[in-house]
Amino acid sequence: MKRSNKIKKSIRKEVFKIKGSFRKNKGKSLIELMTALFIFVLVTLLITNIYSNTMNHYFVSRKLDNSQISLYEALMHIDYYVNFYGENHYIQDERLYVEAKNGERQNYFYLLNSELRVAYKNESGNGYTSQPLLYGVEKFNLSENEKVIFVEIVTEGGATMRKAMGRI
Image 1 (cartoon, rainbow, N blue to C red):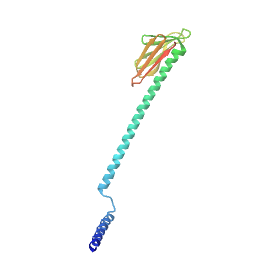
Image 2 (cartoon, rainbow, N blue to C red):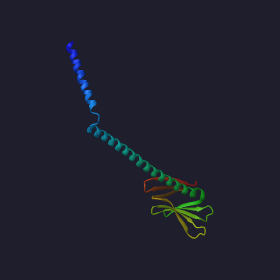
Image 3 (cartoon, helix red, strand yellow):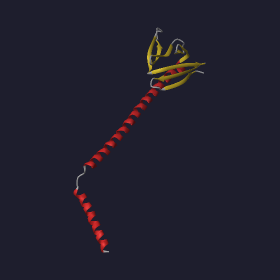
Image 4 (cartoon, one colour):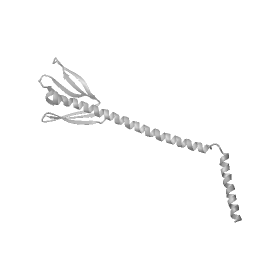
């Protein structure tokens, strides 16, 4: 029994020595500071990378949304002229011609360089006034089947939209 008491006392002394040595070292060691700094830098880089990827994805999707909206509006403008304003329409020389209901005015849509343009016949009947309808267009495909016109617009960014229009 004496021996076990001696062992217990010696263990207690050693524990107190260890605790005492921790109490003596009040500051942080250089290794602890370097480890904390490394973890901080690693977390900061991770957060920066996540933020950067999120912002890039947001701007790309936003740009695509604007492109899709522009395509939709251009097709709706063409559809308005074909279905509601025009009486007769036909395709000639890669242009979509739309005659007015009174048979006098004739407007047409065409691709010039990378702009989809609409040409309005002047009120005086002398010539046309051309205005851009959509920028950055790669292809403006037109096809006709009976009285239905199929229009496909492809932008330089790769966005594509198709629409069938006309009277049946």
